[in-house]
Image 1 (cartoon, rainbow, N blue to C red):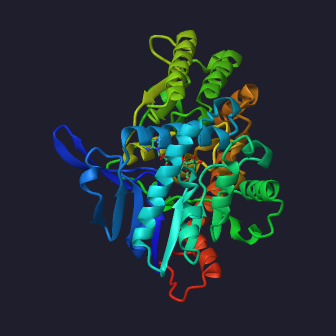
Image 2 (image 1 turned 120 degrees about the horizontal axis):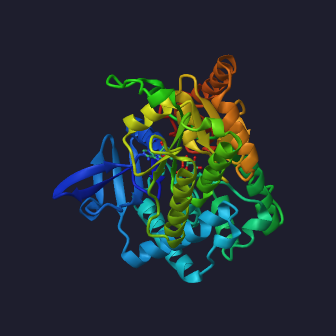
Image 3 (image 1 turned 30 degrees about the vertical axis):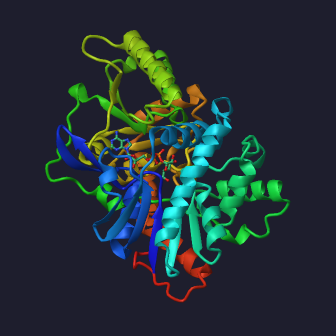
Length: 454
Ligand code: ADQ
C-alpha cells in the first residue's frame, strides 16, 4: 500500500537564488510530518509547484518518494490561492465575517485548480493506493475523485477550524464543499469541537448526518518532540543583559494570530506595573506570509505602528520592551529561542491547532506557556495559563503571573505539558490515522508504514 498525498504547498521547491539553483525546504509542521511518512512508505506527493524553477521539475524522485507538481498561471494562482482560499475560506473558517469575500469568479479558479489536482491524482492512482487530501485549499478534490473512482479510498485531513453550521451557511458554495468533503471515507480534524460542527453542518445542509458520523474523527497533529527537545551541539544558553526575562512568540503574519492584542497586553502590563521597566524583553518573531493579499499588507502596517507606539511610550536609550523581527529564521535559531524564553505568548484569536505551542513545550526547560483558549492545541495543553485573547486585562495579568511564577509550579505545569506533547507526537498522529484507515479499508493489500502508535 502506498499513499498519494495532495497538499496545496509543496514539501520543497526549486528556486534560483543569486544565480544558483537551490532546493528550498518547506518548514511547516504538516510538511515535516508528511515527509516522514513518505520517506518510510514511499508513494506520490501531488502539490502546487510555486518555486521559480518548479516547472522544470514537474515529476521527480526525491528521498524515497515521488513528487508530481502542478503549475499555475498568475491569474489562476490569484483566484485559487489569494482570493478564494485565503480571501474567502480562511476568514470564514476563523469566524472573521467582515473579511469574507464572496466572489464567484475566484470560485471558478478554485474549482478548476481543484480539478487539476484531482486529475493529476487520478493519473497516478492504482487500486492499492490510499489518497490523502489535505486542507481547505483542496476541499473539492475528494468529491471529484469519488465521482470518477467511487471505489478509491479517500481520506481528508482538515487543518483549520470547522465553524458552526449557521456560520458556514454564509458561503454561497457551502453545499458543494460539504458534499465533496463528506464523500471522503475518513475525515479528520484537530478537535472534537470541529468534528461536532462538521456533523451539525451536514445535518443542516442535507437533513441528516447519520451517513457520515462514523467517518469523522478528531486526531490532533503532533510534532517531532525529540527534535525540539534535543540541544544542538553549538547551542549556548544566551545571557540577557541585566538578567532580563524573555517573553517569546513566533507566528505567521496573520490577523487570526492576535498579534495586535498582544501588543495591547504588553502596553497594559507596563502601565499597571511600571516597576517592570527594563526587566523583560518581548521577542516577537513574525514570519512574512501571504504578502500578495491586501488585508495582510494593511495589518502589517497597523501592527508595526503599535509596536512603535508602545516602544516609544515605555522604552529608553538602554531598553525597548518589544524586539520585533519580521523574517523567517532557521530551525536552530527557533529552537534556541524556545529554550531561552521564560514565557511563550501564543495567543491566536482562532487557530485550528497551533504547532508553535507544542514546539515550545518540547524545547523549554522551565518556561511558562501562556496560551489562547481559542487555539485547538489548548484542548490538550490544559496546564498552560489559558487566556481569552480578546480580554486584554486577563492577558496582561497572566503575563505577569507567568513572569513571576514560582519554580515549583513552573516545573509541575511544564512536566504535564511535556508528557502530553511527547505522547501525542507526530508518530502517534500518523499511527492513529493509519489505524482509522485500517478499520475502514476494504481492499486487501493494506499494510501500515510501520510508524509507531504509542
Ligand atoms: P499555520 O497557521 O502555519 O498552520 P502553526 O501550527 O503555528 O500554523 O505552524 C507554523 C509552523 O511554522 C511551525 O512549525 C513553526 O515552527 C514554523 N514557523 C513559524 N514561523 C517561523 C519562523 N519565523 N521561522 C521558522 N519557522 C517558523 C495551519 C493551521 C494551524 C495548524 C497547522 C497544522 O492554521 O492551526 O496547527 O496548520 O495543522
